[in-house]
Length: 402
Ligand code: NIG
Ligand code: FE
Image 1 (cartoon, rainbow, N blue to C red):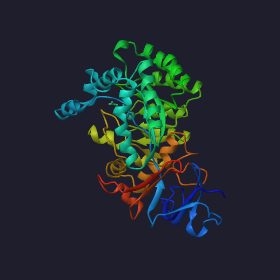
Image 2: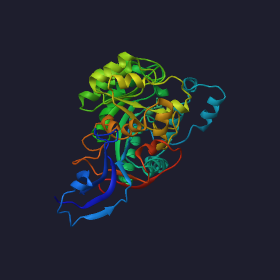
Image 3: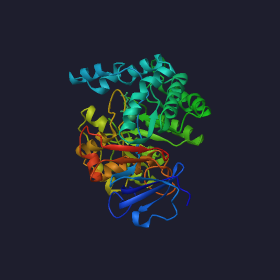
Image 4: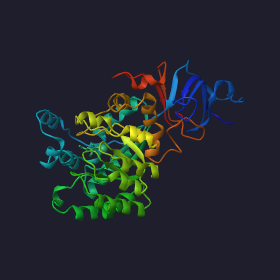
């Protein structure tokens, strides 16, 4: 076996189905060849003939898959601190949105920014995720809402991926809100999302998946379906902001169209859960938005468990509903607010998050053949990752074996 480096004396939370909920291997070792894991398993079974490889002794530290933040809107400029104050005085997220604030206020700021300005504003946010062990981050457009601005956002996202050792997966979210120049003509705007905008960003190789916001302040099921049909016709996977503020049956629609994930899901009903189970659509839970909007309607975690729907979790990092820059705090919130177990929270930030992005062959567990995207932690047990608040025990992070 040709191997470049070997991590030894580690404790592995492989997150593969195994003896315990973390797929623990103690003591364990990981052999890395180039960007990939060549071998992972118990220390006692470490293959011989690895003499030329660099040996890194981890002194019993825990190694997990690199964290996968599978739902962010981290490319934007401006902030919405003022709306936070207004909400604390009684205004609701929907009211601010209908009054031209909300997503539209970030659209105005983002349209006014150049691509380099967007990159500069967004880099510290990406760095915050990386600092807590993220090795893959999904980034959505959706604050441009016109072809040149959506493309600018996605170019900025790609540029962020080149600027840092992290995998960036891009998602076109043109169907996020109705821009003012199309007021009263949502269907005309959806024609643009499903046609010229999609074609332009796809031609430039800027888009890995397509998303929409199906809700009373977003778009209808029929409009969502048209965007999805166009994406599928172009060979692009789809995912959906569904059932966040009301039950529109969006998750069932998304599942019926083979969506990778349906996200938010506070108002998801059992019919939607069953549809997701049938299609293998991942439920992406976003406790940051639930917390920050002071929501009280919980996503149906027990139903999701009972139907065997995989649950991912994510920061939803965005300026309006979830200005949350911490994957670890997200794991804590998933436990405290949604009653996930710490093992479910870690699986939600690794294995299931990778599935929600359609990259399970490359990321999400510690297994031979996958990318060597790993996080090494100064902890005594993996449940600690979801336990502390505002504490970062990351020792080191490997991305593609480096
Ligand atoms: O995931 N639900 C819609 N989209 C974002 C919020 C975006 C914003 O408020 O700027 C979300 O919560
Ligand atoms: Fe979102």
